[in-house]
Each structure stands twice: as structure tokens, then as C-alpha cells.
Image (cartoon, rainbow, N blue to C red; front, top):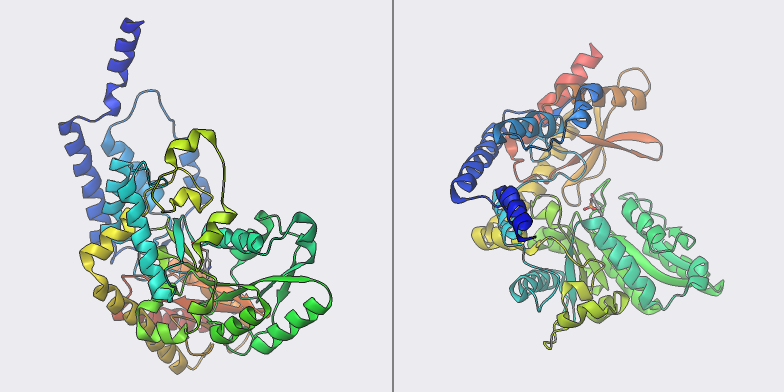
Length: 480
Ligand SMILES: Cc1ncc(COP(=O)(O)O)c(C=O)c1O
């Protein structure tokens, strides 16, 4: 048996790199990342692709014997990284633009190399405390006190799901109550909340889409009237979901008014600030999101507002015990993980057990760069959105939505002839073919709009001006 083990050990030994192998692989990976960053300003924001050509990836063999690093990196560079949306491009104004701070990437690398067990205090106290430090910082940004807590999730959708589950259990709902329970939102609420309700077993609950004002914000009067009506009808109002920066239009619901209504009626008040949350770091954002501290829970996405790569969201809850109650478990094999110390491990207050050591990718950039630089970047994005909105208003063929409340606004081309929706769709196709800038679109009340979302760390005045000139150019080509 020992002989066989020794033979297998020898065969498997290549999985652990020796110093020279590690150095060589790191050199190649770093050179790829160097090429990526050095060419990002020249490369398109969007590269059109041929589905059939790309399907070759599906045919790529996964051989018994590994291939040389150059070949593998080449495949990644050309077939994987190039086609489609170049997320970290400064000319990406689509969806909620992602970024990719290099300091976060290095944090990820170190997190993966050390593979600390960030879920359980007794295994990796440092990693758990680091996450706790970041949670406390975000709780402080929101204005929550010492009873608050939370966890680092993979993104906004899962963080919102965790909030829905917590609100459900806080209300003491049992399955027989689900179809009589009511959640209040608007048509601008991110679709992940609707999905979260379904996943949480609340598919049959009553969803009340509250009327909005001209700026796509929930109308508090309409909300209160609906709650009172539902209570009179014997239903169970249990959760209000407000947006602090909706995806479509960047609208911030009137949080103080909603907060009062929630308190008066004893309803869980959740704020989805996945997009807008980190604008709390600057005074304009703080003013726009006044009242967020009245909420019971908030979602913020560091992979949006802190410019980190995808894979990190945060749920912060005013009373961390509620989060723990909703995620309690028993498992004999976890008996060693129950630390004496009075601290919740992420595994105690979230649906995850083993998880990526996410705190490292957030802590490292915050520590290395300091907070001031983030405030400047966030303030820059707010101003760039305002600047772009002003510039778009000057273009006579363009109709803009209202002034951005944060860093998103909508616009559409009003063509001289033809169906406006179809013509704008055509304009979008032309923009995709061109690829210098990337915009995503939406439909509001049957009208097709472009959305301009400014949140890439690499978007500055030059990129904003490029957006304007490409739009003008494409409109005049289509009008010709
Ligand atoms: C307001 C809002 N909430 C939730 C989400 C979902 O977040 P994620 O994509 O991180 O799951 C998004 C995504 O854009 C969002 O804009």
C-alpha cells in the first residue's frame, strides 16, 4: 500500500508548485493582467461576438495531461476576456458598471492562497474579525448602533434574499400565513427582491406595487393607505422594500417618511442600497439617503460603489440577533466551532458555510488607498452624471429624464421620423456594433430608454465626452 501511496504522491506532486514554477506562473499571469490594464483605454467597451465561433470553447478538450501556461492564458485572453462587455472599461455606462481595483484583485489572490476559513471564528478568528470590522464600518455609514451586524455575501441578490428571510422570520410567519402576508415595493424595485420572495417560499404572498411620483419614488401616502387597507382586510403587512438608488433611474425613495410609516405599523423596513449605498460616504449621497438609519436592514454592494470586482455584497441588519434567529442551525459536526467568545461568526448569521474570504478584497483596498480617495471618486461620479445629463439636455434630438438623484439618468433619441422605440433600438444596435461606449437600455411605461450609469472607477471627463460624441455621431449617421 505504501508503495502505491508513494507512486500517487509522486504523480500528484505537480499540483503544489515549487518556487521556480510559482515564479514563472505568476510572471505570466502578471504579464497578462499588465497587458489588460495597459490596453483598457484603447480597447472597446463592448466587443461584438459570433455565438458560433465562441461555442468552440465548449469543444475545448480538458485533457488528462495539462497544457503549457502560454496556451492556456492565450485561450483565456482571446476567447474569454475579449468578447462581450469589457466590464472595467471606463466607457462602460451600462447596467450598474463594475470596476476592478487591482488592490482588490491582490486581496483575492492572498485570500485564495491562505484560504482562511472566513465563516467560523474558532477556525480563523482574524478573518472573521476582519469581516466584522468592515461590517461595523458599513453599519456606521448607515447610522446603525452597536446592536447591528451583518455579513459579506456574494452580491446584492443573495444579500437581499437574506434580508427577506430575516423579515419573514421576524414577523413570525408560518407557511399558512404566506398567502395573506404583504410586501410593499414599487415597479422600480430590483427584480432580485421578487425572486428572493419566491425562493424564500413567499411566492404566494401579496406584492403591493406602490404608486410612484414623477421621479420614480414611492409615494408615502399611497403606501400608508395601502397598509391600512390591508390591515383592515385582515392581511399581514410584514415588509417594506425601499430603494436607495433604483437600477433603472437611480431613484431614492423617501426614506424618512417610509421609516415613520414602517415604525408606526410595526413593519420590517428594508432598504436596497446595493447600487447607491456607498454614496453615503459623501455629503451629497448622505443627504439623498437621509432616513436610511431608520431601516431594519440595508444591502450595499462593494462590487458596485467601492469599485471592487464582482463577488461581494453586504447585508447589514439593525439588530443582528434577528439575523441569527433566522439562520440558526444545529449540526453535531460543528460543535467545535461554537466559540466561547460572544461574537457571531458569518456562518451563524447567513445561509453560507464555507465561503470565499471576501473581507480581504475589501479591506486591502480600503487600507492601502485610505477612504479619502474613495470619497473623491464617488463625488466625481455624481458630478460626471450631472455633467452628462446637462450635456445631453443640450442635444436637440434628445429627451432626458429628470436630473440624476445619484449617478444614473435616462434619455432617448426623438427621431425626425419613424417609431421612436424602434429607432432607439436601432441606435442601441449601432452602439453595440461600434463598441467604443457601452450603454444598456430599459423600458418604462412602454417607452424604450437608454440608461446612463456612471460608476466605473475609470470613468472620467474624457470617457464622458466620448459618450456624448459617439451618441451624436450615431444619431447623425442614422438620420442621414
Ligand atoms: C438596486 C439593486 N439591487 C440589487 C441588485 C442585485 O445585485 P447583484 O447583481 O450584486 O446580485 C442590483 C444589481 O444591479 C441593483 O442595482
